[in-house]
Amino acid sequence: MPRNIALGLLPVLILTACGTPQERCIGRNTSEYRTVSRLLAEVEGNLARGYAWEERQVVRTEVDDCPYFFVDRDGNRRVAYRTCLRDVTDIERYRVPIDPASETRKRDNLVERKKALTPSAVNAVNTCKAAFPEEKKG
Image (cartoon, rainbow, N blue to C red; front, side, top):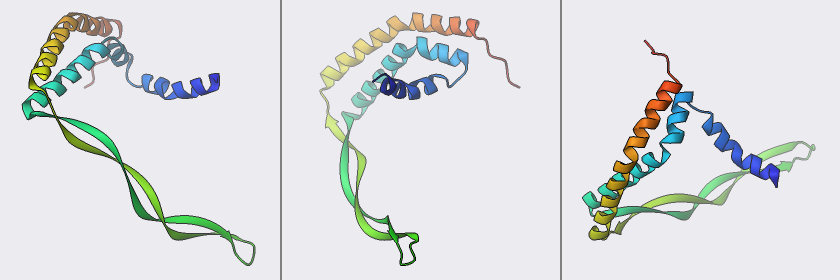
């Protein structure tokens, strides 16, 4: 079990190691602000369009050439191809009707939340820049 946890966390640790120390610091300390900003942009887009986008997985079957291995008369392993069917999963976007009143309330709440988070996000960015100054390129 601990091995599985370690293997599961490995991609997270690799992604965390990407970027400069300043970028990692800013990313760590502004994640909620960025999430609220992303949600706000999504809600504003829904209101502008009049509908929301959702995604679903669609499985379709396609014809492909599949390899198979065999041993020839001389005892050598060979590879050949034959026609086969494979399931392929695609992501399909589709429109979903929205309730404009509900979306407006959601937008208003997200605007207020973003205003509340802005001072701490600005402070975190300034603190990270001071703690991890980057060299100027050029």
